[in-house]
Image (cartoon, rainbow, N blue to C red; front, side, top):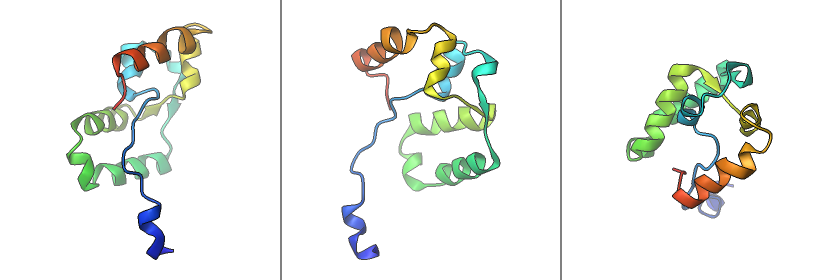
Length: 101
């Protein structure tokens, strides 16, 4: 399989979903948050050590926020703001103003 690795790479990636910085900025309720598991923390620590992360300051910042808070949120957490916040506000704003990294 390793001989086919070049066919399995992703040339570019965008982080469109709920960012760790969005959790505080939007005042997502704490009961809508999920504690990071030990596996999450280990994966995050591993990702933070990857050389390409150092070249992506926004990724690095979001990972630092995630590590410090030890909490994550699924996109459904936006329903704690309003039932249609995701479709009416969040995604249109992200797409219109380039709110992805």
